[in-house]
Image 1 (tube, rainbow, N blue to C red):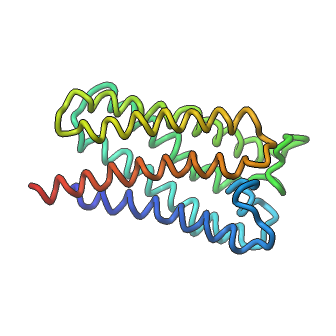
Image 2: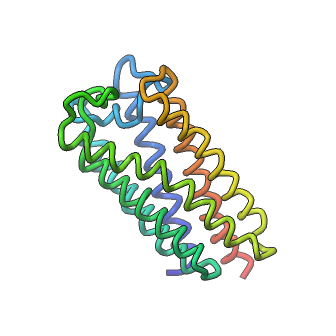
Length: 209
């Protein structure tokens, strides 16, 4: 596929995720974006949970997986870019599909008391995402730092990875914090910024060519 197609796949996947996350909060009375997790908006007992999962979260994960595996071939090949995009595709793209298939329990069971199998799989996938996705962005940023044309993109990737890890630390250290929803949205915002930036770079390469 050409760069423009990869661009559209990345932007569409990111957009569907953002729209689903916003709609999920709007559809639930009293929902707080500051103190509640994104997953709570499509938890197993929510009215519109299945719609959000099957028409939002899961399609988004599929598109972002495709974007990662297609984008890898568009950048200079190296072990770092290979592992970076592979980790991103698995731990963000495929993991997003998994958390959509296996929603969390009511309220997302933050204390993890007698969790269902679905909650266990949901938490495991989410943890792998937040532990490894910032690393993937740093690895790709390091690989691209060797090429003048990718200097800005490289710095952005490394910065996104570091900022991501700072808020992942807060997120994992304080699972019952009243700001847990804010921490998660900052983390996800960093991931989305990275996707959009890399997607637009690919589109611009097509335009300049």
